[in-house]
Amino acid sequence: MDFLADWLILIISIAVVGVLLVVGLVTGRARRKPPTTGTDVIARPTGPDVDEAGPTTATATAPAPEKPALDRPEGTASRMKRLRERLSRAQGGLGQGLLALLSRDRLDEDTWESIEDTLLTADVGVTPTQELVGALRTRLRVEGDKNADPRTVLREELVKLVDPDMDRRLQVSGTDGRPGVVLVVGVNGAGKTTTVGKIARILVAEGRTVTLGAADTFRAAAVDQLATWGERVGVEVVRGPEGSDPASVAFEAVKQGVEQGTDTVLIDTAGRLQNKAGLMDELGKVKRVIEKQAPVTEVLLVLDATTGQNGMIQARVFSEIVDVTGIVLTKLDGSAKGGIVVAVQRELGVPVKLVGLGEGADDLAPFDSGAFVDALLGG
Image (spheres, rainbow, N blue to C red):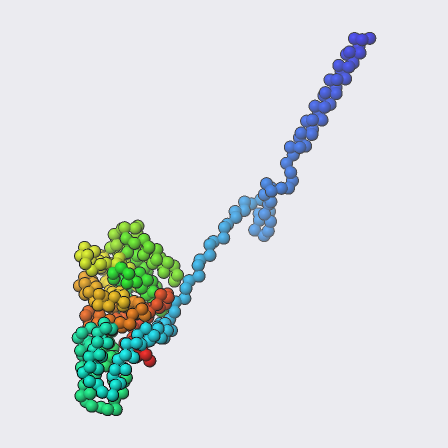
């Protein structure tokens, strides 16, 4: 009996263990069953573009970055009106001083000497000063017209001195389907790179297409600055590695302008010190290389009006190297020496074509002799 009882207990134990194993297997499978919902499940796309025969692969497309809004450059007419007002505030002292002297009851030698001193201090230059004083003497004293208005006489003679007959148009158009090429030169600190950017804005405002060439390759800041000017108005900037050959960059800019049918290519050059003959020779090379693609239609020399007669030295040297065709006077609002306009035109025989009167993006405008003289006289 004990033997049978032991066998019965063994059989029951085996049965119990078997039942427990079966239960464990069933429970484990249930736990491993994947969920019907959750973050790892990719839902089948629905909608009119989905193939009903089976799921499609949906590729999420990142939204394209928004292009920055382009500036709208100010038109020529409005900027000239605003700049006349600024010029009047900056230069009115010169004209008012001359008028005060000419309005004296008696125009004696001391008065004429004071008039000469005033003009020379304003950087008009010796020869132009002598011409102006001679003309004023003839009309106000020698001819003895007691009814002559000193202001009217002074205005007429100043306008003659500034020379209203000079052609001040920017030559920004090429021939035979090629772009106009404007080479911008000048010493460091005159505002050359900024001037290039501002000229680009003037041309864009006139509906012209423009390409900029960043040939001041030894100053990374100048290249970046020009790129910023270009981005603001949607103008492409051709640039090279820092320290690369400026002539090569200029060549590529003009080449691209020719291929793309651009209206005007503006080339910014490195600031050259007039006493470094090697650098000046390099500037001549830039011009020669450019002209393998298209003729240079304009060479603009940027001068800082506050440098006075030192600007005349710069003007002479640059003119010898690259045949300057026009002057851009910057910072005219920061100097009472507006006579530099007369002096530099006489020295080079080329006109002042643009003047800058502030740091704003549109503070550059075509030079107008009548408006300039009116500003000198404060009216």
